[in-house]
Image 1 (cartoon, rainbow, N blue to C red):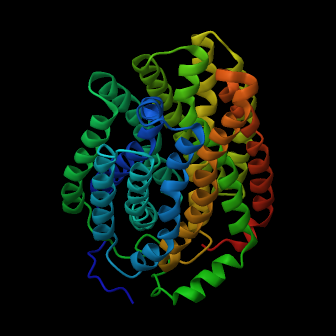
Image 2 (cartoon, rainbow, N blue to C red; image 1 turned 90 degrees about the horizontal axis):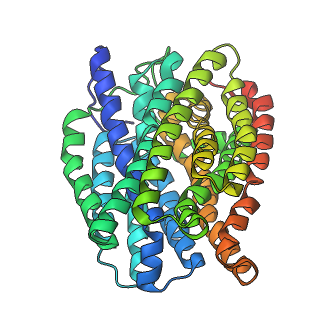
Length: 424
């Protein structure tokens, strides 16, 4: 049974938009704190004497270990407790550990601080998915989830931009401290604005009490579409997270761009390309998925197949205008899966199980995609350095693009099964 005393979901459309805006703001800080390491990698590598493999571990595994491992128990709690309090505490925790990253004196200390960021962010996403499903009717959810996912390109862009500019003006340590403290200031504002809604308030049938954890998990994990969706998204995330983390270093090593220049270049590209791609995916998902739920998976599958050659050509190009235009396309398409895929996951279970379902999906997606992605590109770069020198990272990026083909294939298979596993 739910242990909270939630208020009814407000009828006001303005309040729903306000809630969504604050959730987007929190998600922006989630990705700002998560992705800032990429633009600071070069400075940290020089200051602490690290290898690409060590940077990849900090960018992926250090964060993913607790982020994925704690996500499911926190989601079980959120399906029974007050989701807004959980998210408020999570926001304060990950922001505090982000600030502590600026005090790290070596690889081990920074690795542990990044693990702390992962502990906090474990409670930041799955409860938000559940809140959105209880604030918006099902015919608007793909767009609502897509709007929420604006936090990814906005946060990533701001992490690149602010991280680079602060590091150039002061140092990389100040960048961590400043953005971490800003997140701490947001936490009480979040709790003040976002109220706990009634579970299932926007569904046709009232929500049943959350079932025992074992039963709910067993029902979800028995559905083939869940595994195809999760593994398909994870395969794309290996490439998505990996390329996003290493592009700043690639621009420094292969194109000779300074810290401020690559911060502005990548920040603008990530912001505009990412926001356009996220909205495109959500719009297409709602438009096509209303009649055919399979479209929620086919839309991102096609996007990944189009993104692959654009990434390949962009990494080969030398002219910065050409590079920008070519990267703008896959930067958007790489994020177009968020609204449709998250909507599909929400409809694999009943309303009272949505937070747990989201956490299970995020567990698979992030353990593989985030945990493997940044390390994979860094390890391949280290392995190829004796042969290719500073160009090793270019070839490491080439090697990871095949994950998009794997993702498209798995999502296509998931689309064939989705209708049988769908829950209205």
